[in-house]
Amino acid sequence: MADKNSREKTVALNRRASHDYFLEDRYECGMVLTGTEIKSIRDGKVQFKDSYISIYKGEAWIKGMHISPYKYGNIFNVDEERDRKLLLHKYEIQKLHMKVKTKGYTLVPVRMYLKNGRAKLEIALAKGKNLVDKRETQKLRDAKREMEKALKLR
Image 1 (cartoon, rainbow, N blue to C red):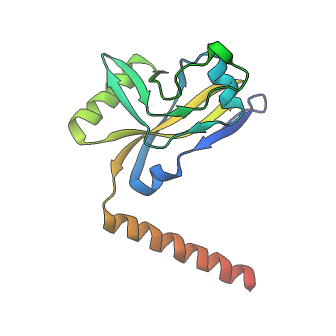
Image 2 (image 1 turned 90 degrees about the vertical axis):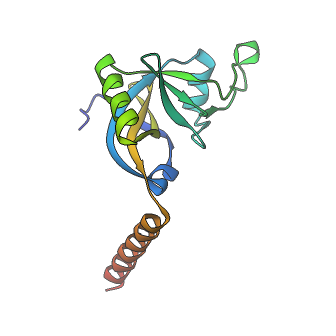
C-alpha cells in the first residue's frame, strides 16, 4: 500500500521465477550501484536471466544480473555482470541465510522498480518446482484464461 507521494515504476520483471519456483516470502531491498548503472536502469536496460542471490560473510549479493552499459558513460561504465551488494537489515539477512541453509530454499530476484527515484529490488524466498508442478500451474492458468474468455463472450 503506497501513499500518494511515493511513485513506483517497474523496470524489469523476472517471469521465469514464478514458473520455476514457488515464491513464498518477499522482501524489498536496495542495491549499491554506480552512477552509470542507475542511468541504465532508468532506461530499462536490465535482465534477470540466470541471476540469483547469495549470502556471503553476512552480506547479500546478487550475481548474474545484467545491466547494460550506459551509452554516454564512456570510462565510467563498469562490468555488466558484476556482483552487486544488496542493502538489507542484518536480522533479515540472518533469517534468510538460516532458511536457505536449513530448509532448502533459494533466493531469487522477482522485480526491479524505481521508488521515489531509487532503484529497489524485490526478492523472494523460493522453493523449486518439479515438472509435475509446472504442468499443474500451466493447466490452472489455461483454465482461468478459458473461463475469462467465456465470461467475456457471454
